[in-house]
Length: 331
Ligand code: FAD
Image (cartoon, rainbow, N blue to C red):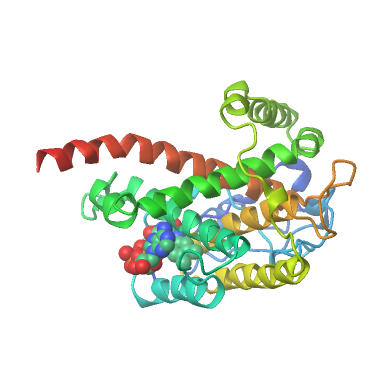
């Protein structure tokens, strides 16, 4: 369904897996597993050794459908080799997914008509949509024949910047995820970052600490989002279940995205949002600091990567907006 080879995901060859996650050799040469993007004959063996799941915990996340299980279809993907960018996935297929998300699960609200909680779901999805569009525009195939990639400011303006509400929703989603990360600070600091490479592990721990204890961030946003205000009132629990169901539908819809790379980033980021929702609104009412929070390995990966995508989007909005203001003034 995609126009471009760049849409397909490049899987990691086994020799790039961390040592402790490798399965015993099956008689396949490393070259057989090398990514041959776009070539159907590049069959990838997706079976994994159960050791890969070492240290993972299987806990239910009521907000998502992607709970980790020891599943032979799982595979490793190096996200750095598969950047979120333009893939050529457009037209009715892509449109149907967004339409399904908005019309079935979080309809647009007319101000004053809908409760705060439902607005949150809409804003989160709209903010994520803005972020995806910004990354498409920031890394766009400008000239197919020359394979020239770069920024497409017009596209960024057409899809996001000209709509202040979409920009506001992007900021909202960023602050929401940031709040979840700061709330899960103790857990994230102590989590076991086992990549199989001690150097990488130390680096990961140090980067996480830098993120969690960034003084600028704490000074600018002491409480980025106040989750305590939600689910109050008599219908609170019922409303929460309803919104949880809607978010699970959105999570399931990600499997229908007909472009592998878009599906990868779509699933990852929706899992990140589901993780933020889980942290902020845990199953049994309020999440208390003494309550033991449990996150799956993939949830931590998704949460941190989502925060990165959103903060990069905000940086791009700030970089691109003055250009537009100047251009608009010149007209
Ligand atoms: P779309 O972005 O498809 O938007 C559809 C409609 O939604 C718009 O007409 C508008 O009415 C409304 N809308 C748009 N933005 C917002 C917003 N922020 N808030 C509220 N409403 C909004 N393409 C890629 O090239 N690379 C990717 O990595 C990629 N990832 C994707 C991930 C997912 C989960 C999905 C569903 C699609 C992805 N796509 C990706 C496709 C991409 O998002 C667009 O659908 C495609 O580029 C066509 O864009 P469009 O102009 O038709 O508008």
